[in-house]
Length: 272
Image (cartoon, rainbow, N blue to C red; front, side, top):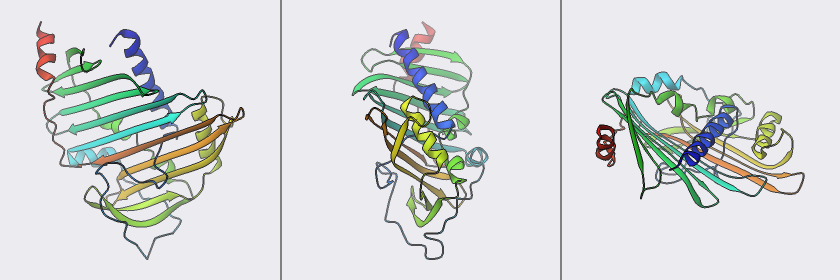
């Protein structure tokens, strides 16, 4: 990966984090379902609370995850901007806090063309980096560690959206082996519509939001285990814009971080 590609990937990551930190995310399939094997089983009705307008009671995720000792977070975004360009970003975090080991991966795609991949592995007081394409990677290593907890949980927007008075309790279901309560945003408030409009890279209000969905699954400990967000809109010029993201928190207390297969090459480069 050359310097321009690296800077572009870092910039994209910063933009994504800035957007998500301010109530903007990305999405979900139309039914708000999770992808892959993270979801399991059918939703079960909860006659005492299903359909109630009542936001989730959330715990302090940082404290809970530090107490659990390990976790896996996955976040992925896909969107089409006002110029018709489709961008995709995927971030993965694997953390063993007690062992002081972590592995993170960030990759992006622009109009179906890979735009860069970065992996970071931390173990034994050293941080190792792998960047670039699989057939021509670059490596680096330096003393020091990185605490991934804050970065990983910042991708969750449950606290921002959960405070919305239109959040509706839809009953319970199973996710990653635990019972969770499903909450959905019944309608988009003006604040969320403005946040969706910001995805057009213009001033808030420059796009008409035609469809919006947000879903969060919260476990009995008050942790957001899965979230999905999506919107579709139309600019004043008639261009369709869209965005969707998914966030999942899995293997809480049971994540193991193995050495990546490229670690030997990174160590050899560092000692050369």
